[in-house]
Length: 277
Image 1 (cartoon, rainbow, N blue to C red):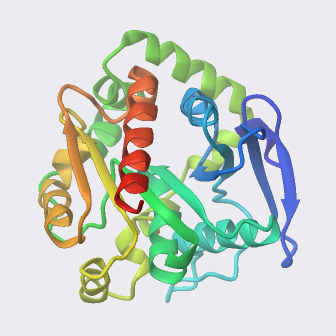
Image 2: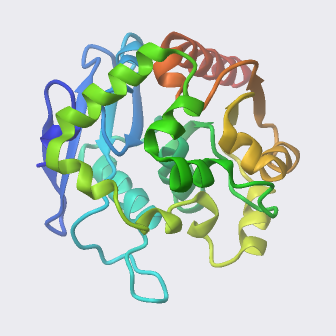
C-alpha cells in the first residue's frame, strides 16, 4: 500500500491482476459517487472533503512505480493507460456503474481514458487545468523554470499564497521516500493526447464526445499559457463543453482556493443535472 500518499485513512483494493490500488474514501453517507485520481492526496484533500459533503468520493492514487501490462511502443510503461485501466477496474470491482469524474492536471488522464474507452460509465467529467494537446506548444515556462531555477522557483509561480509553500513543504515531508516515484521522465507519456495512437485520432474522438465536459483553467497558470492554443482549441471542438478561465488563479488552485474548485465542480454537476431533467 502507498499509504503515505494519503493524508488520513487509506484503504487498499487488490485488482484481478494482483495490482494493489491505494485509495481514500470520504462521504460514505452519500449515495452518488464521484471518483478522482491523483499522485497523492494531501494538499488536494480539502477539495476531496468539500466534494464529499454531497458525494461518495473515492480518491485513487495514480501510481508511477511497479509494473504494468500497458506499454508504449518502446516498451516503457504507458502510465496514462495504466491509470485509466486501473480506475475502471476499481469501479467495476466496487460495483460502481456510473460516476462523476473530477481530475486536475495529470489527474485528467483517467477521465479522458474513460471518455475514449467507457463513456457509458461517466455522468460528467470535470477536466481541470488540462486538455488534450492538439496544437503546437506555445511556450515552455513550466519546465524551463523547473529545470533552470529549481522546484521552489516553480512553486512560486504555481501558487498565489505564500502559505501554500509551507503546506507544500509539509506535504513533501510527509511523503518521505514515496517522493522518489515523482522523479524521472515517466510523465511524458501521461498527457491526455497520448491515450490515442496519434493526434488525428484524438481530435476525431474529441469532436464526438458525448460526455458533458468542464474545462477550467487559471488565467495565471503558466501551463495554461504554455499550451494556450491547445486549450482554446479544445473549447471549439468538444461538443457542448463548459469552458472557464478564472481570473488571477494559478496552477495550484487547490492550495490557493480549494473552496472555489469545489464550488466550480458542484455548479457544473448541477448544470448537467438540470440539462438532463
